Amino acid sequence: MDLQTFKQQILPVQGRLFRLAKLFLRNREEAEDTLQDVLLKLWTNRQQLDQYRSVEAMAVQMTRNLCLDKLKSHGYARRTDEADLSLIQANMGTPHQLTESADTAAVVRQLIQELPEQQRLILHLRDVEEYSFEEIEQVTGISINNIRVALSRARKTVRDNYTKVLNYESSGY
Image 1: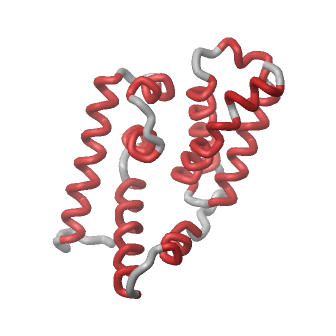
Image 2: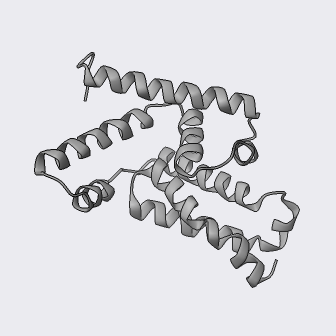
């Protein structure tokens, strides 16, 4: 794979890879570092990339694996999520509305983080990155029917737990 092909196939997906890394690591700097590591590995192995059906699916899998490695590493510590501040500053509204929006976003984010890894990944790929079921199948190796089931369960779990939080049932938030 030459430089031009690399730019055409890999660089357009780096935004998706970054958002995926940020989903797992919840830290902008760590996500940027992970993205750089993935891009470097892809560039280093560019001669073998033609062997893969979907380079994007492989890049997503590499990003996921690197994030999981970082989370499992001994010294990893999560820092404050800067996106919360950006979200609050970007929204228009009264201070009460801004606070309520930030609280809602934090609760939903926490509920998503509590999902099993597979459900969290599928939910992110489908609802945030807007991958098709076929693309998710390539990335995860899970059949489309199982993806649909996992996605449905993830959405239901988040919805039910959010309803519990709203109704102050077993609220740990």
